Image (cartoon, rainbow, N blue to C red; front, side, top):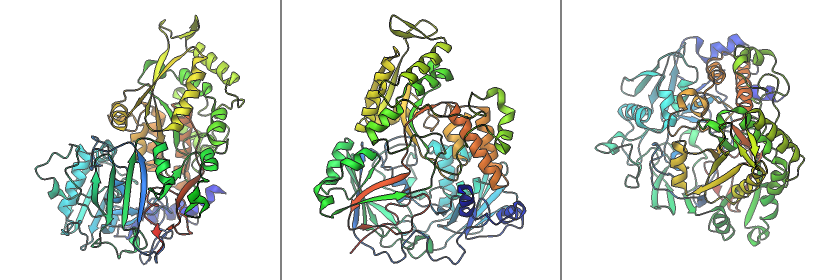
Length: 606
């Protein structure tokens, strides 16, 4: 049933394989108002607004959000520096824009049309003549080409991998840009459509790779940086002269006059700021805190609304990532022991009242998740050539261990001890000893400011102590945390991988071989596995939705059975407390509370 719903969402439920291929580009190429991986965009060229936006939303007001940590840069497109995370999303635009109600579809934004080669060997965009930067200057083909070449060569690692598959970029006429691929790639056209477009002239004579606060971005988005104080706040103001305010894609979006981001040393200080009315919205990830901490006076007075927003996106992976570049975590049996030793049910009950389910795989909670039991059909067919390289559970079926719910987790500790013994570890005088005779010690890297993570780690390290393992915890500030994480200077680290309903090329940067030694990549675990490479390749080259889903489910099996992460839990519902004057539409996109929803389609009631 859920797979059928998923097919409907991507617009191919009623299409045969032949027609799906034809609609997605096997016929004559032609300019379109949008593109879809499979089938056609759900919204026709005459659409008036996104289905989850309120076209009559009033303008005005402000929304104030909170973040823990600090920032020392306003350039979100390079590896150096710490940047407010929303800046890349609110202050920059791309040629195409994403509808969060369609996993595989993009619509024209800076580009009035997009055309894809019949064999997916190139993509061509035509700029809108009215597109402008915030200083009033026109967006030119030269700006587009400079942005792509700069980001693809010296930008943040998230841009680099896809650019290696580009063979050329050139101007086509006065407003056209064509990007050619080194080999046909169905998804690459969409990835190229989502690159931020920068003003080339702003960076003349400057080193783009250097972080800092001296360059306030000139961009094309509805918001501009209005004011900031290093490490304390950033204020974005709605640009009254924004070039695209009348576009159907923008109707009912970005109507709040000011988006202000306040920074705090830790989560406790941020929550206190919300209860005091300094912040106007707060996301709560702990079900226990949601049930117990939100009965303060402003809630009882009706000044704060408690909203629960359902979604259909994958759980992703949140937990403690083990760095397989370290010798002791290179052995999968040691990683299995770390998972077995984690008293998941006890911690979940302590932190969440047992409400939120544990993460069981990377794409859990979605139609892309691996199915229970042995692999069958196309999934098993895709995995079979790699049987010799797959760990136990990949084809047979892998299930996360379930403890007895107690802090001692006797069965889990026993299973962990057995796995370590199988890997050649022994206990000598109460100390877990590695095969080389040295004590088994490792460090967990955390960013300061999260009381929730601190509580989890305290319980977990106690469990590991019962195994004779000496664990240290390094708690560092945001800048140090990012620096160490980017160069993989950790044994185990907390991380959250948010995964979408349309996974593609970005999977290479998460766990592909090329990203294993690329500093700044998301491949924190150091994954490099032939089956992972092959499954991502199959995803990108699938000619049907069924094969695509089978490839993702196979990838899910490999990633989960490789035991790279000690998983926590996920929230199948988003919990948002917000000031009563803040409103959002009744129609919720399938992604729910996700990037591009708050503050994009919210408004302030007059």
